[in-house]
Length: 265
Image 1 (tube, rainbow, N blue to C red):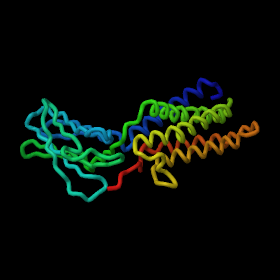
Image 2 (cartoon, rainbow, N blue to C red):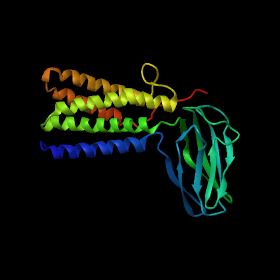
Image 3 (tube, rainbow, N blue to C red):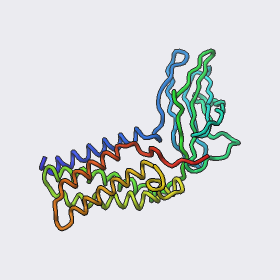
């Protein structure tokens, strides 16, 4: 494993797997599934994040015109009564929006929980079993969001590269310093800017809250600051690099946006 191309290949593969896993298991990833109604399968995809500048569409493709739909929704987390909203048909698609007019648009970090009930004659099925929770956010400019995402992705990539260099041989110091710079800039400079645009708060982790995205960034940042400190004076500090990388991969395995910003009703 001393060959650089082997180390790079392993680093890229592991980082991509981790990034895909984190994205697909997060609470903002669409709730997907299917139900059977009238002897036919109907696939559903319910969004779980949307911009505060508009109403979130809820759509179901159901070519059978005998199928009708209703969306039940309420603010989350509350004990508000469920409100039923009839879906209308546009060709093969049943659709409605949340929150429906004349309800006001949602605030930053406002959440709704909802589920869809499809009916055909005497048959009725609901999806999902537990209501989907959707969160509304402000629009983040691409000039902030793209560099933030790239810094965090390449921070994880170079962390893995540093680990393999430390274990298998190579210039682990260089990749460790690059990792530290990327994670600190992406997580503590660009990250709060993204958070401010999306949820009107620069930081919602410790000591101000329990946002796991902010807190895991804090943990990873501290781990790499300690590793960089151990590297001072030309030291190799391979153990510190391995520990920092393991900490980074563990905390970033936590789905993105867990325990995220939430409006208080």
